[in-house]
Amino acid sequence: MHRRIAFALALTAVICAATTASADDERLKTAAIVLEEMASSAGAGIPQSLLAKAQCVVVVPGVKRAAVGFGGQYGRGYISCRRTTGGWSAPGGIRVEGGSVGFQIGGSETDVVLLVLNERGVDRLLSSRFTVGADASVAAGPVGRTASAQTDATMMAEILAWSRARGVFAGVSLQGSTLRDDSGENRELYGRDITNREIVTGTLAPPAAAAELMAAIEKAATASATDAPAEAR
Image 1 (cartoon, rainbow, N blue to C red):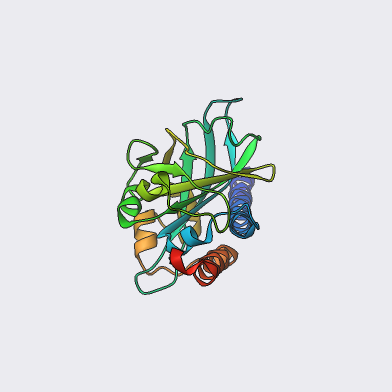
Image 2: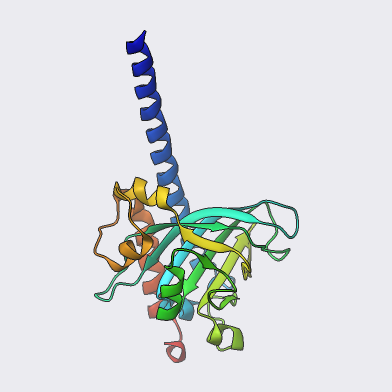
């Protein structure tokens, strides 16, 4: 009897671990698709000039709203930052919770991309808990691949945010939302407890499951730097 119970518990643990790993892999692939589509959508995507200058990229696919209209939301995604030596860091898990996204993005699930534009924004976002609107200046990003970024909002903001729901792109402020490390996700990806600050400022190699996401980030940043108008560089 004891052996049967022990076997059943062990089997359950294996199944749970496999299910979690599968969910993590799927979320990484979805994040790659979201970034690729939102960065390459002709005339309605994230401006190339802003992708080219971003210090960090945050991708949160399928943010779920907790209420109709104004209400809370919850999502899990990833952050990657530029390395001082070139290229991009391994991805760290990040959670978006609370706050309100309002009516401007609609839909039951919304893809969200944030670009961190300067070192101050990076430092604040990598704190243990970051609240949009309280801890840093976050603004709705302009829409359009070649849209001018020279507006008061984008010049003063440390972080810009975009959303996509049912194929419609829009800037989004995420006012009142909190962003924090997804400790469970990082443990699954790297096999130990590790913070996003340690991941994006260190030399960790990205896990194999993140290959598509890393390729999407490199492609978006490289294409943006190459294709952006000269005056925007």
